[in-house]
Image (cartoon, rainbow, N blue to C red; front, side, top):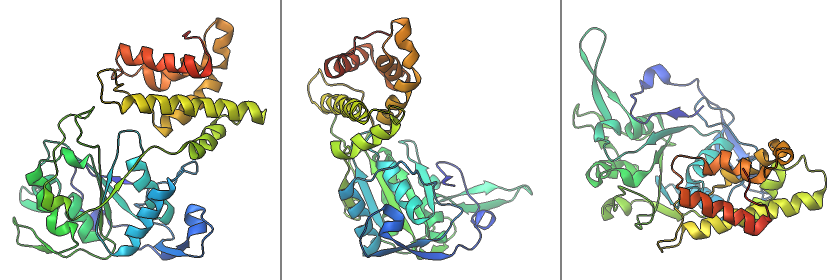
Length: 334
C-alpha cells in the first residue's frame, strides 16, 4: 500500500517492511511497451502503490519518467493543470515497478518539522526525535511524493535543497546526519502559478527550482482517451455505437478543458479529468433507466460525477451541460 504521511510521523524502525527482492522488469512486463529494455524495481514491496490495470500513460511523460529513473538524478517536478493526472502518473510508475512511495500533501501552513522531523513526547514522558516525510524517505531509500509543492512557503521548501540533490542532510535539532540511501527520489507535483484557478500558490525559489528535472503534464490525447472510455462502455455490444459514444464523450471533455484554460472572464473553473471521464461513461450505462422517466442518462450521470460537486458554480454547471447538448445532442433533462 502507499503510505500516506502528510502531517503524520512514521517510526522507521516500527514500519520497516520485510526485505523486498529486487527485480529487473522488462518494459513489456511493466508498461506494455515491446522494447528490449529493462528497468530495476522490486518483485513485491509492502509500500508500493496498487497498480491500476486501466491506467494509460501519456507516452511522452512515461519516457520522461524512465529517463529520469535511469539518470541518477534525485528530484522530479511535474507541472500541470488539475485533472491532468500528475499524482496518478507518479503513483502508477511506482506501482508498475513495485517501487515504494511515501506521499506528503503540502499546504501553505506546513513547517519544516513535517518534512524532516520533530520532537514527540513518548509514553514515559521523555522526548524523542522522529524523522518525517522527505528525511524519512531518504533514510529508508525510497521515493517520496510532495503533492501541491508550490503551496509550501519558499523558506520551508528551501530546507530540502541538499536532499533534492541526493546530498547528506544534517538534522539541526539533533546534529544527526542523514545520508540518503540508494533508491531515494523526490517527486513533486504542482499546478501552474498563472493566476487562473489556483489560490495561494507560491513562486518557487530559483535555487530550489534549479534542482529539479521538470516536465509539463497535459491531458491525454484523444487517441489514448477514446479506448479508455470504450472500455467503460463495454456493455454496449455494437462496436460502432460504442466507439462513436466514446468519441463524443472525449470531445465533450476536451471542450470543457479548452474553456477551463481560457484566460477570459468566461473561462470555466471546473475541468474534467480522465478519471472523471471514465466514471461518466460507466454511470451513463448504470443510469440508462433514467430515459424511461424522461431524463437523460448522460446528464444524470454527469451530475453525479462532476457537476453536483459543491465547488462547481451554477454558471459552470449550466455551461458544461450545454456542451453535452451541443456535442451529443442530448437535451438537458435531469
